[in-house]
Image (tube, rainbow, N blue to C red):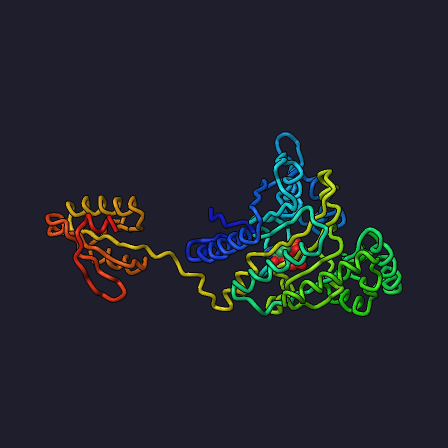
Length: 414
Ligand code: ATP
Ligand code: MG
C-alpha cells in the first residue's frame, strides 16, 4: 500500500528545511531583541478553551477544528491558533517574579480543517507574539513594528499594512445594529455563511471572501464612525505612533479578523501577490480574553504570522536563505588502513569543533570526491599511505584548488 501524507499537510525535507530554519532563527532572534521570551504550549488543549476564546460563532470553531475524544473521554482539540493557548499557559503559571508587561513569542504548528489550496493548508505554521498587561497603544505599536521589521529583514517590503479598530463592548453593539439595519433589505442576497453570521456575528460578513458578500458590504457603514471616545482616542494614538516610526498603513474598516476576542486595534499585513491567501500576518488587541480564560484582569495584544505564506513570498523574491550547510572538511580514503585513519581524523575534527564528512557508503575514491562536491565541503583531505606514515595532510581548498600541507596536530589545534 502506498501511504501518502494526509490531505493539506506537507513534508519538509532538507532541500527546503534550511529555508525554514533561516526564518525561524531570524524570528526568534528578533523577538528576543525586542524583549520577548519564548512560550511553548501543548499541541492540543481542552476543546472548551477555543470555544470560549476564539468564539462559538467563528469559522474556526464552527467548522475548522480537529476535535477528538481521548481514551478518558476528554474532548481535546489540536490547536488552531496560538493566542488562546499562550493566554491559558500564562494564566496557569505561578511565576510570581514575572514582570509586567509579560512579553512572549511562539513558533507553532496550527491545525484547521480547511479547503486546501496554495497558501491554505490543514497543518500550517505560525510565528506569533503576545503582550499581556499593557493598556497603552505603545504595546500595539510595538507588535506591529516587530512584524514590520521582521518582514523587512526577510526582504519583503511590498506588503500593505491595513489597520482598523473593532471597537469595544460599549461601541461595537451600536455598530453591529447599524450594520444589520444596512444589510437587512438585501439579506436574501447574502451567501449562506453570511446569512448565518447575520444574527450571531454580522461584522464577519465584512471579512467574507464570497463575491456576493463583497459587493453588498462595499458601501456599508464603517465602524470608525461609531467608536466611543476611548476607542477613538486609542485609534488616533496608534496612527500617531506608526507615523512616528515611519510605518506606512492604510485605514481599512473591513479588517475585522476571524476570531471573536479582538477589541480596539486590528491589523493585517497583506500581499497582493497571494490572492485570497494574501494575509501574511494578522493581529490585534484583546482587552478581555485573559480575564475570560484566566481570571487576571490584564489586557493583551499580539499577532500571528503564517510561515508558509512568508516563505512563498521570499521564494518568489529569490531570497537566498543562506544556502544549505557547508561542512568544513571532507575526508576521503583510498584503502582499508586509510579508512581507519580517516574515521579517526573525522571524529577528532568533529570533537575539536569543526564539521567534517566521510562517505559512509564507502565508495571508490572518485565517488567519494563527487560526494565532496555535492555536499559543498570547503576543504578536502585524501588519506593514503603517505599521510598515515607522516601524519602530514594535504588540505585542498575546494573553491580555488589551492593545496597546503599541514601537520595533523596543527590541523586539530587551529
Ligand atoms: P485567512 O483570512 O487567510 O483565512 P485567518 O484570518 O484565518 O486567515 P489568522 O487566524 O489570523 O488567519 O492566522 C494568522 C496567519 O496564519 C494568517 O495571516 C496566515 O498567514 C496564516 N494562516 C491562517 N490559516 C492558514 C492556513 N490554513 N494555511 C496556511 N496559513 C494560514
Ligand atoms: Mg481563515
